Figure 1 (cartoon, one colour):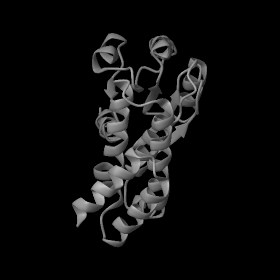
Figure 2 (cartoon, helix red, strand yellow):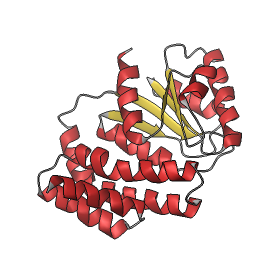
Figure 3 (cartoon, rainbow, N blue to C red):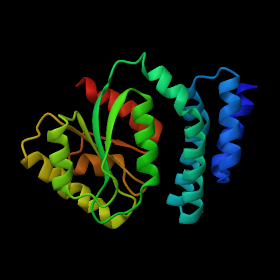
Length: 214
């Protein structure tokens, strides 16, 4: 039964069916499945598959957006249960998150933010088209543990590198930097001296937990 629900959640996201994702998420809660498991084993797997297809040019941006909306609809159904369980979770740290300057894509970044919050992080979501100065100022203001830089355009990947260089020059030596986005890779993260790379929201949450301990 549980595997059927996970399959239904994944399919709803792949097809961009928000109502189906919402009803499947509600069903999962009624079955007593932990909300984080509903996300990681169902909704997130659907987004990951569509993201891979988008990266390969097999689907278009409109389909990626529809999948992101379906994911968010499912997560919205889970939020009350997630917030309730968060009371029992010790704060994992603070993450300043944003899509880099020159890039206005938000869906992947917002899903990562939701997963981070579900795992006990305080998330300062700066939105899209964010310059280096904003990342630096907010990280200092909130004494952030991690800065997350998202980029969905190949052209904005270079902006990730520029922002990391600016962050290092600003004196934020103890802040860990993680990057993500469809065109990015682990090799790219190493090249620009990021502390880690994540290809999907579940991996990003796990990476953040690892980085927060260092």
